[in-house]
Image (cartoon, rainbow, N blue to C red; front, side, top):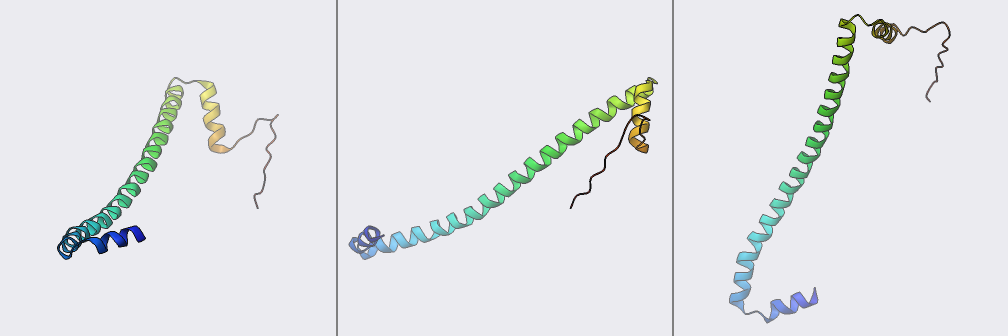
Length: 102
């Protein structure tokens, strides 16, 4: 910092004027650009989140499409699985454990 102050003192009045006339607007532009950079960073984060959400939805869609195809083919295993998922049914030999979260 002291070196910078010494440099300013060594500059003549005209050079100081031009340094201020050109440096101040550049500093203001840099500060304005930093806000744009932060907004860009936020937008990129949102895009990444949405991209992962789209990918998850596509995987879910593919799984549901496969299940629908099995149900259309009258696959008994698929019908049993769909029934058990929707009604939360258990086989006679199964035991369901329920845990409470605190």
